[in-house]
Amino acid sequence: MVNSKIQAAEENLIHVYNRFPIALDHGEGMYLYDTEGKEYLDFAAGFAVTGLGYDCRELNDALKAQIDRLYHTSNLYYHESCGEAARELNRVSRMDRVFFTNSGGEANEGALKAARRYAYTRKTGRYEFIAMENSFHGRTFGALSVTGHTPYREPFEPLVPGVKFAKFNDLDSVRALVNDRTCAIILEPLQGEGGINLATQDFMEGIRRICDENDILMICDEVQCGMGRTGSMFAWQGYGVKPDIMTMAKAIGNGIPVGAFAMTEKVAKYSLQPGDHGATYGGNPLACTAVKKVLEIFERDRIVDHVNQVAPYLSAKLDELVKELDCVTERKGKGLMQGIVVTKPLAEVNRRAIEEGLLIIQAQGNVLRFVPPLIVEEKHIDEMTEKMKRALR
Ligand SMILES: Cc1ncc(COP(=O)(O)O)c(C=O)c1O
Image (cartoon, rainbow, N blue to C red; front, side, top):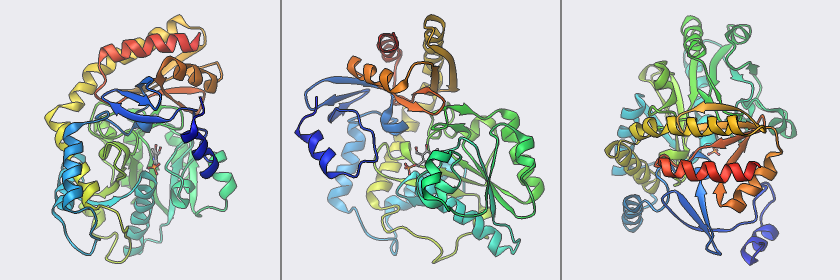
């Protein structure tokens, strides 16, 4: 039903989103409620953002306390929450230096600049990037330039020069693009927007080897697949293949706008220097309080262990859909970042899911994506499966 709030948005916002006609009001745990009081089980988590679900009291209280104390300074001064969030994020990501941004796209912008700056300092003459087909890295010019999906790119060309696209999970196609101008290889260990495509162990190890043998930096975009979603704190850790630079956003602030790119000391030594990069809001006290608190809760409540406990149940239930419904042909993904390939039009399935009180998202390749808050339990997976069956029939 189109109420006055929806109508106001329709009339006043630039129309870049195909929104569903519901206006959300509040959330609690795994559920969201619209302004008419209807309940929705959330298997979208605001695009894999709200790992801790909604109305996490502890996080709310920490944020409220920080708002009353201080929520903006500028990056000319230190503040306690920034140092602590950086230390904790470096500890869990096993990186050495981090820069806070406001989004995932910005985190990737920074990572690309950091890689070029590394090459510039070392006078290697390297500036090219190798990215993957079907990748998604954001909507800013740099991030879009390494995004391997033509419809996103075409209306905005020419983009940043020096980008080549290899086939995901095909080392030969990567090798064919490597030359003495290659600066970095960027990839998502588990592609989200691109259709829930998981990198193989061989591919991750092979990329690392190519980088080591050719003085190339490896950049992992963990914006969507990071923060416990695949069953390790960051997806690369599940492979034991450490990148030189990594990017994060989404779940690190549970919805407070914050992202980050981080690098090893080896890279940092030659990379960005004072004046090279910045962000007025990046790493402000509110964002850093969110990161710090989210990480504290993740560790105390053993969220990653919980993902590993509950994920096999999600896999089993999605396999059940594949088995029982002709229109579901495949299950893909890992941990709590999974998808099913559906032969029916996805927009219609999504609309019916919403009628059933279930939120899910689409991905390329006619994939329905399941990225619930990481606090999801078996009873929620049961509820989702029943609703999905009705929406797919
Ligand atoms: C892998 C990946 N990288 C980058 C981004 C861009 O993040 P943001 O929308 O916060 O700019 C996204 C967003 O979906 C993403 O999935």
